[in-house]
Length: 304
Image (cartoon, rainbow, N blue to C red; front, top):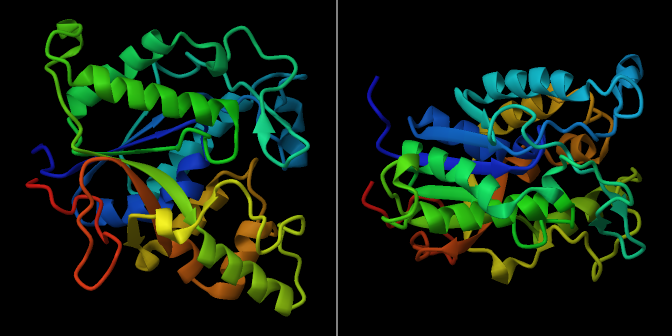
C-alpha cells in the first residue's frame, strides 16, 4: 500500500481527547486521503464513569476501565476512518494520572498519583517511544496540546512535553539511529478553542433558557482551554464531518453523556460549533488563506 503524500500525527493524553479536540479535522483529512496517525499516551484508567453498569470498572474497584476505553477508542476511530492508532509505548505502558480541581477552576495533579502514572514518566524514555513513531510515519504536521494542556490536566501537560521534546529529538541525525532515520516535522500546532465561538455558543444557550455547562464563566472569564482569536493561526472547516465527530464522541460512552454541554451546544448551533476546529502554530510558518488572517489547511505552505 502506497504511503500517503500528506501525513498528520496527533498526540493526545487519554481516549476521547482526540474526538473532542480534533475529531472533525481527523475525519476531513482521512476523507481527503491524508495519512492520519493518533498516539494516545494513557489508557484513561482514572476517567469518570458515567454509565452505571460500568461503575465496577473504576480504579478503586476492578480497575479495568482501560480495557473498556480501548474498545471505545477503537469504535471512535472506526467512525472517523482512522486506521493508524497507537498507545505510547504500547497499551498501558503509562497509566492515567488522574487529577483534581483547583479553586481557580483548572485541573492539577491529584493528591495520590500511581507509581506508573504518565505524570511520573521519565521524559526522555517517553519521548523515545514517540521518536520511533515520528521516524516511521514521517509526518509533515503534528498536533498536540499547549504548555498548560488546555486546562491543566497533568497528563495533557505531559503529552505536550513529550510531543515537543520528541519532535526535537527525532530531527537530530546522531540521536539514537536505532529508532529510525531522522525526521524533522515541518509544522507543529497546539489545539485551541475560539473565544468568540465559545462566547457566541454560551450566549445562544443562555438566551434559549438552557443550561450551558459553563455557568461559572462569563464574558471575561472563559475556561482556560479557550483562546482569544488573535492568538489563533488556523481554522479547519470540517463542518461536513461534524456528525462523524459527534458520533465518535458518543462512542466514548463511559466518558461523554449525550445530555452534557458538548451536545447541548451542538443541538442548538448545528454543525458550526463542533465542525470548525482551531489551532495555534508552534513551529513552522503560517500561510493564511487568501483574504483571511487564518490558515484553512494545516498543510498550507508545504510541498507535500
